[in-house]
Length: 132
Image (cartoon, rainbow, N blue to C red):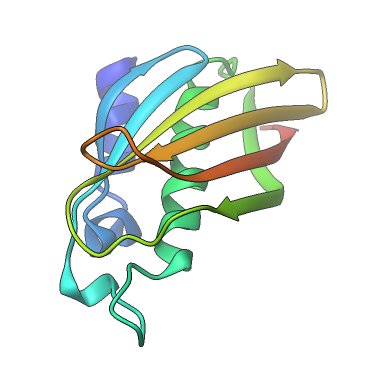
């Protein structure tokens, strides 16, 4: 199941565009990596916040996907990001944990760090559980 899920996410054209990859995943936890690319820079030479937000959303999605039953899927309903430090180089890591999985809503949180463990951003994402 993990390998099928990993391949499905990795085959996503959007993930391929950003270069996101799964480093580790288990039910309720995921670590994703966003490699530095000049294509992700905004006007001031920093990685665009939208790229970091995409990494957060993707990381929570992987963590929660392994907690869903075959009859369930989920979609993002809300996301909040606190950007703490700019990123100008190096890989970016997102560690996501599922904090609460209810019948309708799932809450996940993410710490985004650089290669040295410096905290770059914090995210909270809410997903709605849908029946297939």
